[in-house]
Amino acid sequence: MTQPSVSIIIPAYNVQKYIERSIKSAIEQTLKDIEIIVVNDGSTDKTRDIIERLAKEDSRIVVINKENGGLSSARNAGIKIAQGEYIQHLDGDDWIEKDACEQMYTYAKDNNLDIVVSDYYEDSDKGDVNYIKMQFPNNDNITTNKEYLHTILPIYEPLYIWNKLIKRELYIDNNIWHPEGISLGEDLATTPRLILMADRIGKIDKAFVHYIVNPLSISRDQIGKKIYMLYEAQMIVDEFFKVEGVYSEFKRDLSDYLYFSMSYFLSRGAIKGDKEYEKSFNLTLKYFASNPPAPRSKKFRLWKKLIIKYLSLFPYGWNLKMLVSILSNISIVKKQLTRRNF
Image 1: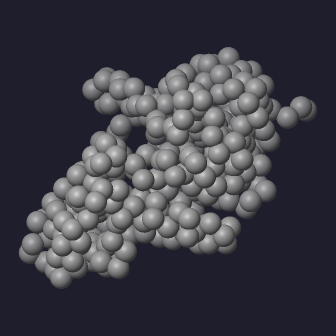
Image 2: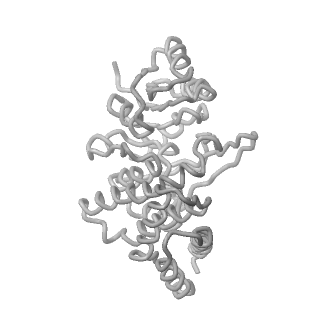
Image 3: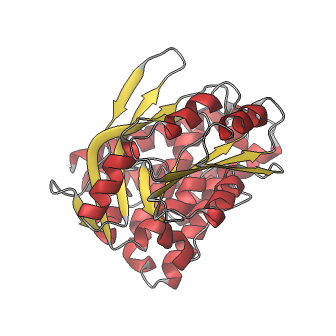
């Protein structure tokens, strides 16, 4: 059997409402020499039945049934058996345009690329579809790993794994895996490592993946309790960059990205009286106090220093919502200043 051009890996956990559309969008790809690896991650609804029915209709579908281990565990299970030259991740509640693999694979081969980045669609549960454009360092749409990281990290560009076509060798040759045990910030822990090990990265100014915004997929309380996982994810990246000898070059960018991530999620709402959230909140304040962000604007520095020092003085307590509001405002203002290059 010849090597498939692309392996589409679809993790699925209790997504009976979406999984058929997701798998069929893979089946209908105009690029035919693909394999479709569907990982049923211990679903308890009808997800498994739907997967197995569709697998009987297309021999390119490979099914893995495993105990529930989380998104990273499911992705890793797929990567370990993947045979494709490139990997395309597709979550079980999302779907992909028919020409996605063909266009990205052709672009990758024509330009000798390790990673291809694309824009994406954000579909709401109300039927609204928004085109989300990803930033890139230059108009040529071809860049190096370091130039790309220095561009996307300071502006808090989403580090999604599923809007990228990734050469499988980047995972295997560099022993890079999605962090199991982290269920918030999995992409934050993985995508920068893959980018760092890539030689050439390109972008297509088109959107292919439809990311379904599911307001019920994770509640505000769940997010709040897991914020500390963003910190853990970042430490995985920091350690990897240290081993590769480039941490000092990216320390500022990585610190800013973590600052954005944690302050954004905290700003979604405070949870009083919960020990897990208290852990997340106190860890965030401790990190901000010892590693204040390095804003790109001189006008912002004094205000930043005063606010961060103020935050570090307050313990978790009755004024939690006020502190969260401050964090949110800092994040918004700093992001605007960064994008405008003041």
